[in-house]
Amino acid sequence: MSLFQYDSALLERYPETRGAIIRVTGLQGGASSPDLLELYGQEQAATLERIGERPLSELPTIAAWRRCFTGFGVRPTQYRSAVEALLRRLTKRGDIPSINRLVDIGNLVSIRHEMPVAVFDTRELAPPVSVRFAEGHERFTGLGEQEAQQPAPGEVIFADTTDLVVARRWCWRQSAESAAQADTTEALVTCEAQHADSAGSVERALEDVTELLSRFAGGEARSAILDVGNPVL
Picture 1: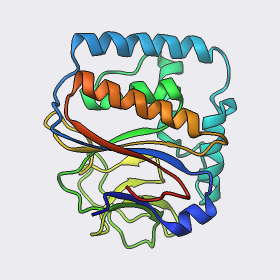
Picture 2: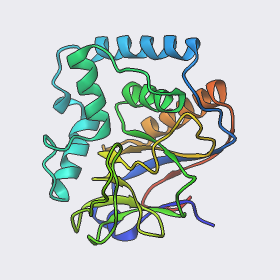
Picture 3: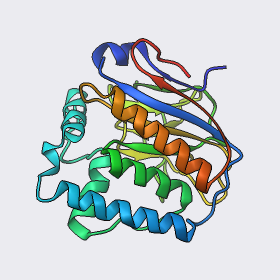
Picture 4: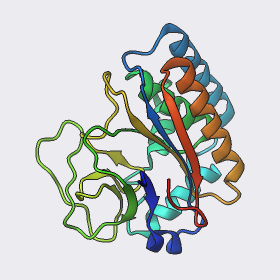
């Protein structure tokens, strides 16, 4: 059974799409350990030093996602990709707060590689999760929200087989149902890129996520790097 896939129509329009997709079972959730928090703090400091005074829009990975968002009709300065939002928080406020060990691991790898990394709790999802263009009837409930919304037709979404939207505007915002919690034991982790020559950076992000999960959260992982020639996990 397939667990995750990129729709063919999406890949036709965005042939540079590349994603490291990891299926992990037997995870240990909860708060981040002191060792993980120390590593997370060190990565934030290193990222601030690396970026310096450069505008985030000049980073190749961010610029590529901005073009992608514009391509499906979204203003990228109004709805920022998850990685740009993280780096914006870090460069403007000086830190990214800890949430839990799974989210912290994802955010650590995201700022290190300047790519969106998402951790999806799969307990309420009906696989496969597909990255595709929305038709407009699907349902999405954001974190902290009570009422479901419908994505705009043509917007890129992650959705399961019941039309439950897992993430809106590709890598902008996750759903309440899929957010990694303290008691998450099974998850899909995605590390995605749109910039040219992204193969090496996606592979390194995959290695980092796999190592950090094994070290701090345990579990068994199965992974693949997906692209236009290999669109299904």
